[in-house]
Image (cartoon, rainbow, N blue to C red; front, top):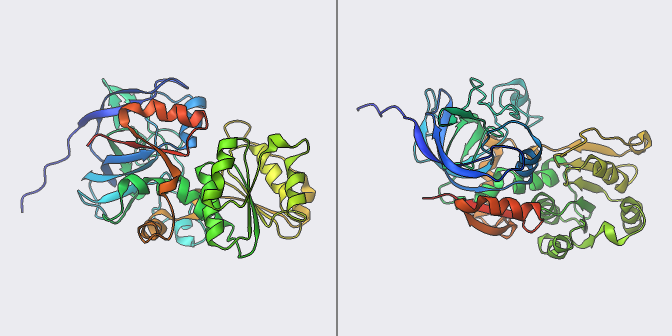
Length: 377
């Protein structure tokens, strides 16, 4: 059997960010072939996540191709890759699973020592980029960079999924919807009949609400200062909504009064460390559990009175909802295919790739949940 020709450099369109807060520029980029343990993916659909916005506004690593919540089809594979072949349907993931490091083998966490959060805009394997514009290197984002027609990822940062699942829907499981469901199920392990309060009613917060509803929570209180989000929240399982702007007292006091001393579970889905403290104050003494999911834009340090913990409260962080990507994500996709979980209603806008800046504007203005960006076929 003749050997397949070696993958070559691809020239394609990508939305390049040249500076913080500057509109993305859709232009031609060169995408290098996948190196050992890597795959090159033709991106089919990608959705905009709040963390893309935060990094684009505040970070200094440019030029850069953002995007990490995506689905696509394997175009070529690098040396040593046996898990994937051309034509496989995949989801990209911003944290990988090498399956061999101490943490992967522990069975206690979804954090990987080898393929953890990538913050330098480079490939895990050789600390170089696979993108360039006219010979100038372009940085990656979260080891994915899906705002490009083609991208290269480590094979540990992609998950093969059923070809029966619609790629334009399941891309949301690459981050937001999966992160919220997992926080409710894996991290908090919400119990039937419990009271839950959720701070932030974006896609992640409303996915926590879906997870809480499916676990049989009796009350799901949503907190947000965006009236439109409050209005839409009940469709996702929220039973009561609270707008902090409607009260003269601290919102934690409002929640404690509503819930007879505090919620059983509280979730911070905003990305505000002051809100973590508020969430901790809003859960009950003895067993109250606060889970933080948001990525803070500023002030990464948090503070809280020690008595909150002394009285039995617990604070936990949640990265991608505790899901181990390769081990867990295929079954989550199957749950969607079998109509056991909802994704479609989180998609408020479908946009062509050349309107990607419109998606950024919609999210900055709080006028969308998820914008799915459809790449040219």
